[in-house]
Length: 153
Image 1 (spheres, helix red, strand yellow):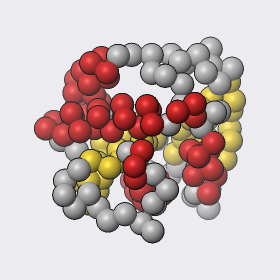
Image 2 (cartoon, rainbow, N blue to C red):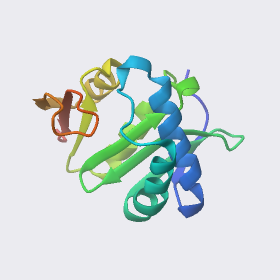
Image 3 (cartoon, rainbow, N blue to C red):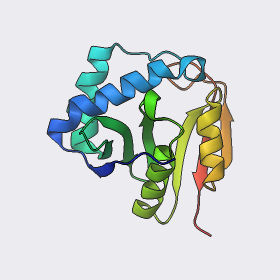
């Protein structure tokens, strides 16, 4: 069952909601995602000062206005894609991947942690292919990751 909700471009006033989805989603992922390298306050400041002003940010909200999911695009990258833990498995991630494809019809790439099986399955279902794997030495969390790419057929 797909959850109802509206996806819209996020603005400066949405920065707290965007940050909260990122923080709660990472916490709710358990061992699938390593702990963040930054504090909650640092994440909130980064979202308000860098992410929302400088990147293309999309926010999905429930009919009652509760934030459910976030997509952040930067050039041809899906920089962030997170779904509120209580809303996973209801099509929101797929909806945001399709939005990303429509916004970047020439192709996309992204990194995801090797341990994040649900995200890996999502991207493979949507036609992404594995392009590169690392031991994690290049990311802040020092966790193995995988770069996926998508090109239109």
